[in-house]
Length: 285
Image 1 (cartoon, rainbow, N blue to C red):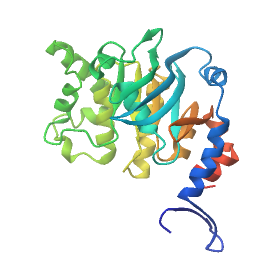
Image 2 (image 1 turned 45 degrees about the vertical axis):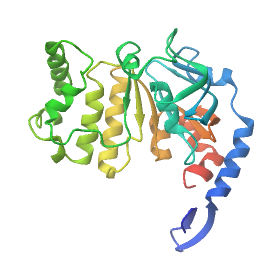
Image 3 (image 1 turned 180 degrees about the vertical axis):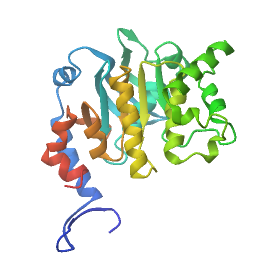
Image 4 (image 1 turned 90 degrees about the vertical axis):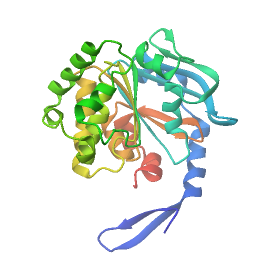
């Protein structure tokens, strides 16, 4: 049933209900009309956001995708964006990193406004790294060479080597393969390499686009374990977009539901998992 979300009765093998894409969009739109209050969103970040977006309007060319978006996430917290296709989830990450046309609003890292910094300055000065959704390893380069590419903004080769060694010390799985071509790695190992390469510049915040996409379940668990370690052991602030809404909300401290370029719902990740509207529309409940 293309275009529908279907719930089945496992015991009887019959279809109980089906939500079309249009029905999901209409129901989500009704949720969006209520919208969360800025004060409540701030409270989810414990009142001290490290990454802060206020009234952000942005898009591509003349097309406006985001409409006065607010976002707050604290140091060492994680926030997951979920919602229907076309809601603007990845566009939020693109905009934070400087890949869209910003028409209004502001982005802050701590107390410093970074709205119009270039992507390289977001990485170098604001210490924000972006981990792409698409496979971005260089398959003909070795693992070590791929990691070195993460330090392209460093003018000191010794500093790049030292940063690469720090990452290899942290992830023995990559260290064992440092001289292997990246193209022969498993999907999970390639994802680990992409995350690790982003760590070379020692970012404070990570923007992670669809970490589980295209991965087998065992590798999905591995990748989320890596992100959990970066958050709780290294104190990284993480904002991610995740197609597997259940997995994303289980992982994240904070969840936002985006609909039509606006934040429709915001809450603790575990609370949104129990929200009957979120479950019905996005979690397959």
